[in-house]
Image (cartoon, rainbow, N blue to C red; front, side):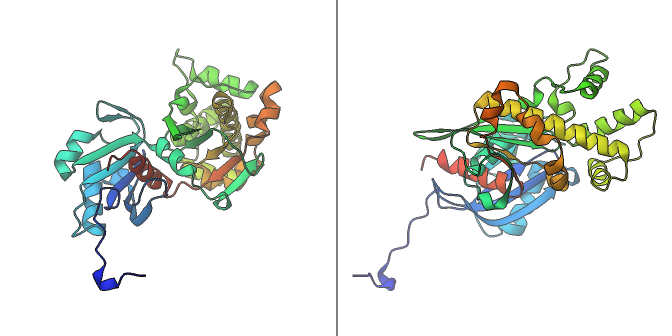
Length: 338
């Protein structure tokens, strides 16, 4: 027999059911959400805003603005913060961010009782597990895969993470794979590497596979041709390449996609990513069609005797959007002692 509505007791508000903030902070954008959820399910985003980091003096100022506009009247004292870089003693280490991110300072400024810090791509990897394949574009491999999955994303930097399924749930590891040594795949790329390392500098994949890296590559290719660089942003270079209006921009994007394919193939081999590869980040959506027709897939598969393995790895392109926010919230809820 159904209990009369007027006699039902309201469910107590627990930590897992109370709204809290989830933030995805990269070198360019901070994505903030007011979220609610429970363990084992994707968090529900109640409110969402995207901020340009350079327009605000601190992360605390961004969070304060969001709270004033989207959570007025609510007592919000918890935040799951996914941030580019790595966490050391409660502080995020990342030279791409315009300001320091400190858990202690955020708690003191905003009055939060609990702030959890994780890597931004660790959060994206958590969210990728729940990604609807219909909302992605399959670039290579079968429709489905089972096993570890990796997330790779060039943006202000080059982010990556791996999600390893276990009997007790998923284990997600942040990586600094973008800092591994750049691996050229042809004579032109070896020439570029030689120029980059001319002063004895260490050359990582992130030196080229990110927004600033694309710009640096474009300028270097102009210099190698004895020409003057006419474009000054990654977005302009991408557009010129897509429209085939600038031959150096076109070469830049071809090299960029080739290097990204090689790097991603290495990641897939390193972690045995039978579950798939998810490409995201702020740069790729603007070159979606170009990426599909580029050497990305060929370079991804071009690993000698390991090609048959990689041919069985699904490679998907997905929009970043709210993934980091949902992933940060999901990670927090899974690790919450309620």
